[in-house]
Length: 83
Image (tube, rainbow, N blue to C red; front, top):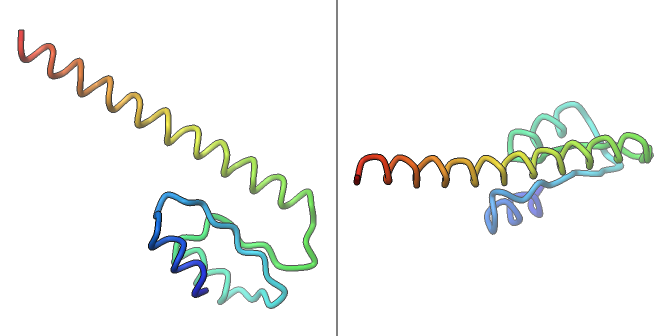
């Protein structure tokens, strides 16, 4: 958990996957509340990891696109109000 805190402190946008051999419901809830994107208990199932990584990549793409659209909206709003 300390590593999760340190990573999120450095960059809150980083999507962290917690993979642990000591997975409990409580530790999963704590990790998610602290900002983990996913929580996978061992033994690791590659299909589960693949699903979570793909979702994280899709979310990352959506956030990037959202940033672009916000920038375009701001530019258009400024242009409309300035002339």
